[in-house]
Length: 313
Ligand code: NDP
Ligand code: OXD
Image (cartoon, rainbow, N blue to C red; front, side):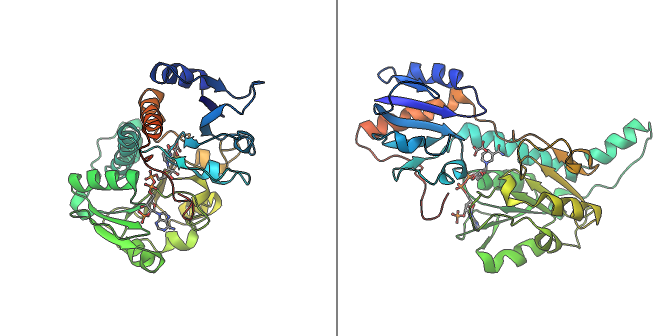
């Protein structure tokens, strides 16, 4: 009945505090620990040491402490049991805030006005209307579709790209590899909320940037990546910024995290960086979701948001 918390880079004690109030019948173990692992039935994992979950021989469910599961799938010894990922209004709300904020930051030329203010100049810079700007969202899942709908409601011309076609009112749907180029060709601001899988690794490269719309009303194509760092090739983003293939980029994720101190991205004047915080996992909300899934499992009901192992997300 034990719940194992195996998480790197996050405060396991505060997760434990939140969870024990919600699951009083389940002892909670924080890894590393000398306790035997055979009582562990559930694991909550974030960047867990590879091989650890295989040692929990009575494990029934793995919970990813995030929406992404790439940190689990990369474990070659991962047990073949259900992996439940986070799909929660709190996580979605936070991601939509990040996306809408960064789209508006570029659309309303915040960086240009910041420079003008610092120069103490009263200078009017042209700003197109949202209805003249085409946003493209790569990844129309729980997070991408919510951000896309909010951007549509602000008046942007929004399209989405995903594996399977989608039907959101007012949002043009592109699906599959064959429709990637037409999707990019009509996109001024590219928002990326794809998972990291073998198919998506390195997808944000110079060839893709060169396919973005060149006839937009803004200053040039914009990239906003809050999906995963392994989707992008940092050096090709830098080259695209330097060669004006991309006008600007907002990046929350990087090939290597933490981003090394000597990365030229830190100081690029048209790159806006954040340290993988686009949507922080709020353990007050997310432990409620996990406790609910445990209750469902123990009542014999189906777990929700179990990943499809064949797709890897
Ligand atoms: P979902 O699984 O709900 O959505 C993934 C979307 O990507 C789906 O629309 C899927 O298509 C599409 N997709 C996957 N592979 C491909 C492909 N090869 N070609 C085209 N489309 C593809 O995930 P979420 O929306 O919940 O989360 C998305 C990602 O956001 C996470 O995997 C994680 O990496 C990242 N994330 C980042 C955070 C941060 O703070 N920076 C926080 C939380 C998540 P289809 O719908 O057809 O299956
Ligand atoms: C996630 C993340 O996948 O925090 O939820 O990146």
